[in-house]
Length: 148
Picture: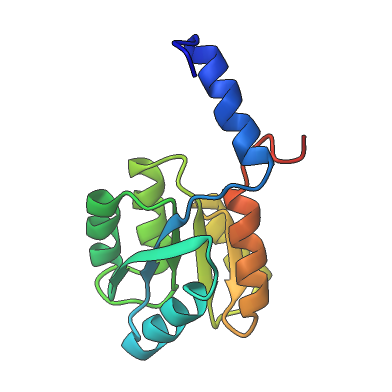
């Protein structure tokens, strides 16, 4: 590029994005079960599009690490010590309004989903359905103009 204007540069970058160039998205996992965190990390890292940048074992630690690491997306469990996933989501949403939050939980209830969404969660996914987790992650991280 030969000193092109910033808008030409932005158009070039958008064009590259549309033809399939990807940059790995940074993911933070918040769950009190270390074995589950490890399994989820290994599962997510089989996808070239994701890099797990951190793990947290409590709601408060998830908030601290999100502040420090600035992930592109946070996957958080409901039942954690010090602060549950919904309380943590409320604080994460206040801290970083545009960061997608997925509540990944064993509890399946439409009431829980309503409460979670009212507190800033973008999606509630059952831990029994990792494929849905990936679908939600791709959907939430897809660029707004990807359909063009």
